Image (tube, rainbow, N blue to C red; front, side, top):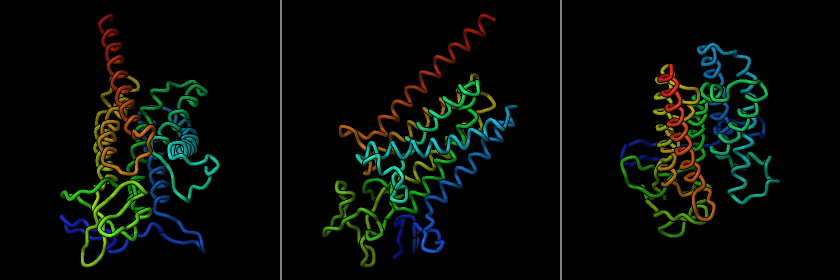
Length: 290
């Protein structure tokens, strides 16, 4: 049997390694490749969008470098804080530990500071960049796939994904059950004498959700009524999807027993909805006065 098996879809992956290739004794991981690819394509898309809307591409090429660094720092700090690790472990990236929401927060802070320094409209900047954020998230989730992480609880549904138990980091098999990261329990499923755990492929759920959200924003962008509308669409759309997908996860970062990502998702939905309603009312009032 393979390393990954979708029993109800008849899909099998014989071998899956988190290492793409080596340079001497140095491993290059698929996770890093997908992150880099997402960032590169995101920059290209952002520059194209800036050109389409008549903005200076130089502004966004300069911002891209700042946003990537801020996003990575935010993703790392967010993970360390809510995972209970020491901030002194910040530079141990190769041991894992990046959180998407931390990256979004880090990028948002960079955008606020940068827009003020350059005296440009923050919401216009956000609208120009937001599809690139989604591109990065879409590719990043495939990095999770190669790492065999960010999956959900047990399921035997149509899209159930069976992971070979011995390949899942942090999984300890105890008889007919397995304990993941010391708290989540999974029943062992045996295929041809090999132990597996069947899980929700939440990385795939989120990837598909993000693609749909990207297509929605892409098709709507020429019809927006106010600056920041695409950003608010992202807040609501991603927040709703992540909230429900996160409820399936078993490796959440928690505060007082509550998944942090669900709290942040709820906050994003509220902020996006309120911003949209207030902005639409403002636009309507201005049109009425004219």
